[in-house]
Image (tube, rainbow, N blue to C red; front, side):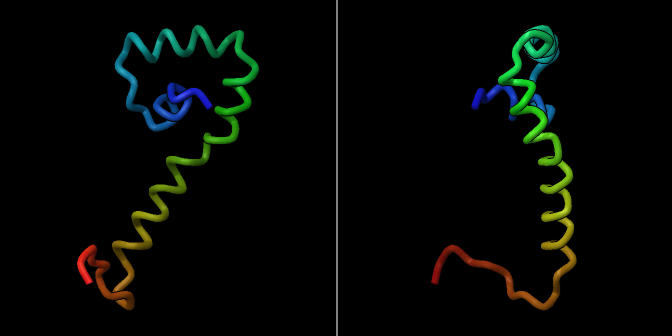
Length: 65
């Protein structure tokens, strides 16, 4: 997987990289396929974040045990 695909989906590319990736995307079938696979990722991350912030039943997770 190209890391640019994930960065593009998450919206973290700067303007120049964003435009360059969109030009690349026009002709790269592999990146187009990867983009389709990752297209729902931002929504899934939002759902996960919302679920964890509204869940009062679960105790906070701690790295130290």
